[in-house]
Length: 160
Image 1 (tube, rainbow, N blue to C red):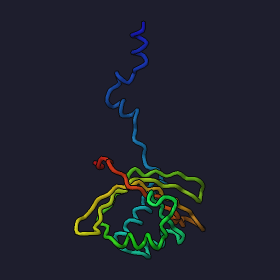
Image 2 (cartoon, rainbow, N blue to C red):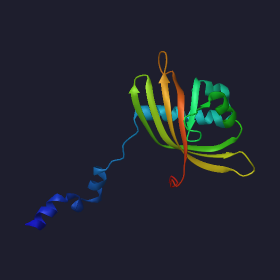
Image 3 (cartoon, rainbow, N blue to C red):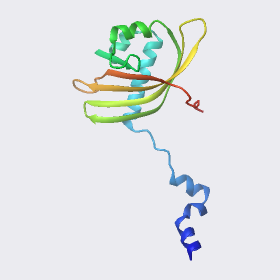
Image 4 (spheres, helix red, strand yellow):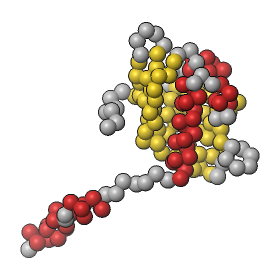
């Protein structure tokens, strides 16, 4: 009797591979994930092209970068621009992007960003966990990032 109860509680053991795949579908990207993924990619392409005019359409005038060092003291937009244009972005990848709509005017976007850049003779690659606060001001899609929380992470397996 106990064996029968265990077998009834474990139907996935007897499911065919096709049935098992149907049980764990990969969630399709939502419209808002695609929208913000494109904005984040535009941002990185503007940095790669060293195009401050393109960044002005993405990053708010009162933008601040927050990092673990120094905590509680944000980096101003002007200092951040000097830093990003002080090196050459060779390549980038945005993955594991998630969006939380706080309201129709506020969205929190987080993702893992891998970037290869050259600041000295040897190119470097780093992974960062990024959280951006986006505000939509005005009519239509007029989204600007006001704050970025940026933290280096180590030990993330490469994306296949």
